[in-house]
Figure 1 (spheres, rainbow, N blue to C red):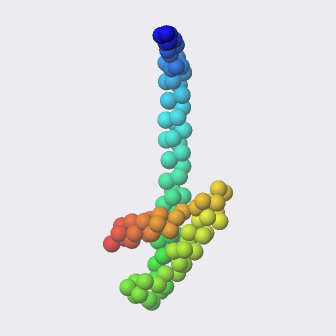
Figure 2 (cartoon, rainbow, N blue to C red):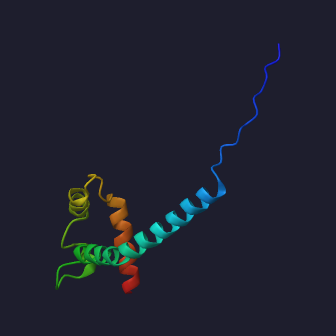
Figure 3 (cartoon, helix red, strand yellow):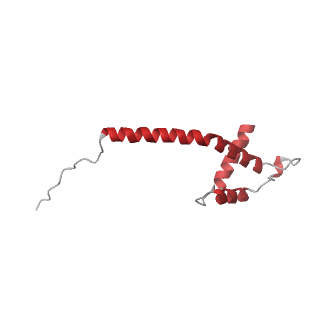
Length: 102
């Protein structure tokens, strides 16, 4: 017995709906990323400053004003979802910020 295969009726919505949704998403994404540029920059600068050594202490002593673990806890407390930044993400941001300063 052969099974009859039904033809695919087509799953794509009309082209004008796809184009409108694509344009709306592009505009929203552009606005979103433009809005977060300055807060992200301030946040990264604050992380780098908190990870820096206290005044008068050489950076080679690996002391920081706020521990990396505490920085991760602060981001978790501030995040409404409770996820925050991982320790690895914080270390990466701090590393990038300190390389830019040099």
